Image (tube, rainbow, N blue to C red; front, side, top):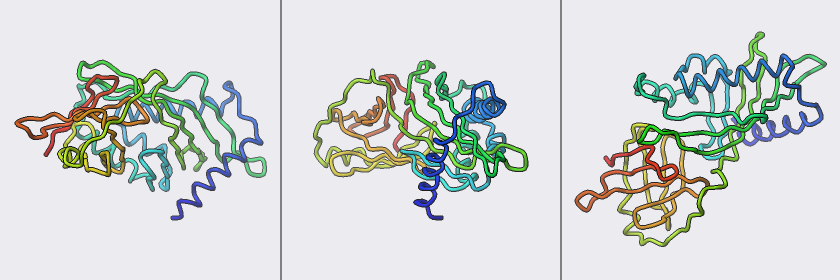
Length: 263
């Protein structure tokens, strides 16, 4: 599949909708797709209901993420969620929350020869993550765009874009320090996280590269044992035991939200 053509096509669709006014919040189309949006993220974040999620995507669903990359196909997109849901303790509180920003949701109808065949839904949402004290800490805020299609009378998402992820403006500015290659290489290896599974850390020039299930992030050194992501307030602190790295602690707003043991 030609990804460049797909992205260009999505951009052209977005430009076309500018010629058509968005529908009002009191219209049936707006209410229907707002309800579908709530159903999708409730299934993903609150109930771990991958069957409901699957019912809301077309089989040829495509997902574009500004950090996580491109995912081709409904099953490939849902596979990591299914794996994480199987490991989840039903009695434990949900690890993350998704909050839709009030007033941000917009819906633009797509028509051909006057007949409604789809719609573009755009909005802004933010996320919160559970720390080690079972308190929710603020995470990223981001924009999303869904391309909905009417398939046999049912609304399904054919394309999804998730982009402009960034921390809140109140996040403190981070300063990068210089570490020797020998120090950076100390942290290389495989780590196991109860939240995301296997995590790989390797040195890349003057920083570290984190990779996990198609996601990757650049970790910049703030001190000899603590690293940060430039785009948000997340920090990664490496813990030493008997002069060897034993685990990596992940912090949001200086609160521990996950620990990955070195394997």
